[in-house]
Image (cartoon, rainbow, N blue to C red):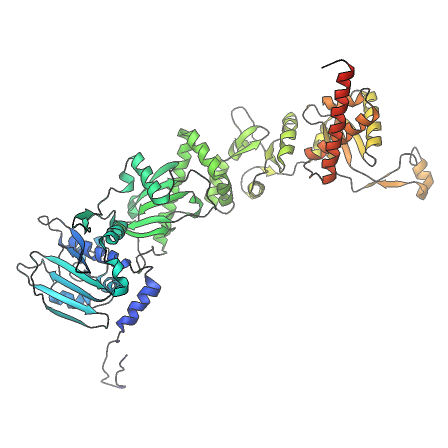
Amino acid sequence: MNQASPGAGGRTELFQVDLRGVVEILSQHLYSSPRVFLRELLQNARDAVVARGAADAPGLIQVSVEDGAIVVADNGIGLDAGEMRALLATIGASSKRADLERAQQDFLGRFGIGLLSCFLIGDAVEVISRSAKTDHAPTVRWVGSSDGTYEITEAPEALREPGSRIIVRPRPEERAWATPRRLVRVAREFARYLDTPVDVVDAAGVPVRVSTATAPQDLDAETRARLCVETFGFDPLTTVRIDVPLLGVRGVAFVTPEETASARRGGDVVHARGMLVADDNTQLAPDWAYFARLIVDAGTLPLTASRESLQDTKLVREAAAAVGEQIQRHVEELARSHPDTFRRFVEAHAVGLRAMALTDPTMFAFMYDHLRFGTSRGERTLRQLVAGTDTEPPARVLHPVLFAPQFRALAPLARHHDLVLIDACHVHEPQLLAALDQSDVDVSVRHLDLEAFVEAAAPAADPGLVASIERLVASALPGHRAQVVDLGVESVAALELAPDDAWHPDSAASSGWGSVLGGIAARWEPAGPRLVLNVASPAVRALGGALPDDVAAHAVRALSVLGRLHTGQALSDDDHLLLGDSLSTLITAATSTDVAGGRP
């Protein structure tokens, strides 16, 4: 920068800008790709058309390749020499800020910094323009160079009508941009939903319309589905119309029909008043809506300097929240009006929904209302359990069971005792139930105490059967204690409860007053596992029959393994071997009995 002389009378001077350095900053830190030059030119051309607003001259933008140069032409308001000097050569100035402020809210681009993007692919930019503000305005020519210089002259050939032609001649290494096929593709990506007609002249010299496509929210269901397949690669399970009028946000959310790799949002396609902003944006829907992909117009929401994302403002966050509310309402309506579709939605996204519910209050509330758990009452939502139904009372205590076989075995027993079990063996479910216990909902989530089942059981009615079973357990499972009860249901043959922490006296030494009088002479042993056998089970009652000793022993051992399964204990390798040997013995015995009895 030139410095002013110190003291009074010092002269204020301007910064000297190295244009090549600015362009390098743009290419490395602002824009994601050199292709943005075409977006910037289309935006400025569209703004010029809007600014003119002439009913007798319908707006049109045309992109072509002429002698190896890219030409973007419009019939907009045009520029005179003074405007060229004030706008094209001023970095960061709005092309319409001073003279066209009345239409500023409808403009997409900023001519100053936008025109610089052309230097990403070329060393010079030529603008030929004729102003529509005065009749018979001259056609002027502005040529800017990447060295920071420019010149303004009268154009050698006058334009027949107001408008502008911007000409960019790519450097040799960037010539691939000046191919009609590539320009058609890139222009369609950027301007597909732009309200101004944009034609790109193809290799055959035929104009191809790449803009003014019908907005996604205005398409019929079948066409929207095809658009989703084309854009995101999946056929949507359902679609949600997005409309936030106060913010100008409109579009469609597509719900994926299958489980995603992670509960993280994929990128959305976001436009701003028809011009593409990004195809990987995640700002306009909440994180919990990971199952939805959007094609949405952000309306007047503020863009960053690169215009490739939205500014992180309160307004943008409010828009995302409003979009989330509309997605949530749609899914909740599915539950009421399209239960089959809703069931497919939940089945596809159960894991992700539960994961998001752990961290997001909105999704936790959705999970509470709509996700169904396996319970001893049948499949129920947590709300149905806590609030009750027309035929079931509210549950005030829920008992999660973390092992599926244990849940299946104990569910009938829980119903018999009017307890509510929840099958919580799936990922995230134990944590969700723990969160429910800490919430404001009037319910407690408690570990299932199997001892309560045993204490509530009726005593076995046959003392002889009890004594016989106790002898078998003592013989087949040394160290185990036997307890024979009637649990009232047949589904649970046995429960093996863990050893007590306490010690108990040996029965021989502690009978009567012997343990007291004998003092330290009495023998005390640690309490081993307790095998609770249910005489309501036919398998347990069969132990009282005339069984060979080895068959009876194997039956007791098999029941002990089953008792461990019912109490949720993991089986060891020895348990699996024991169960295999026992089943082999029991099957062989049964086969021998059938043969001896003359059965086929």
